[in-house]
Length: 104
Image 1 (cartoon, rainbow, N blue to C red):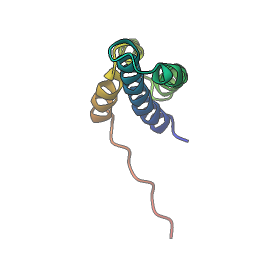
Image 2: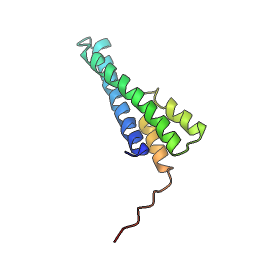
Image 3: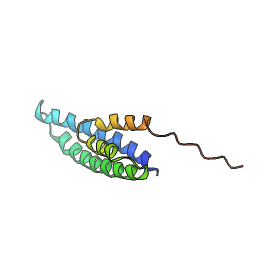
Image 4: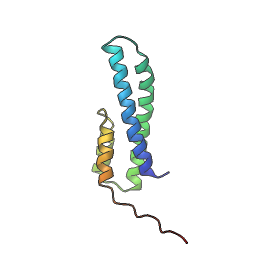
């Protein structure tokens, strides 16, 4: 699987897991209804966070990102939903991939 594709999937998954964790924290600390959301999404988000970091380092190496871009990508994993913003930003600045030549 292509490194950038894995990066995109993990960026979106990390953002969704952040959202689930935020909802879980609301249910636990504000409405005091249940802590199941924090229990579940805390684990899911932890796994997605680590997966995003690994995918970021993989794509940074594969596409020869600068240290600045790599640093911003890693830092985007900390604030909620920022991985989506960074993924959109880097997708627009990525060089176009030429389609493979058709074989006859």
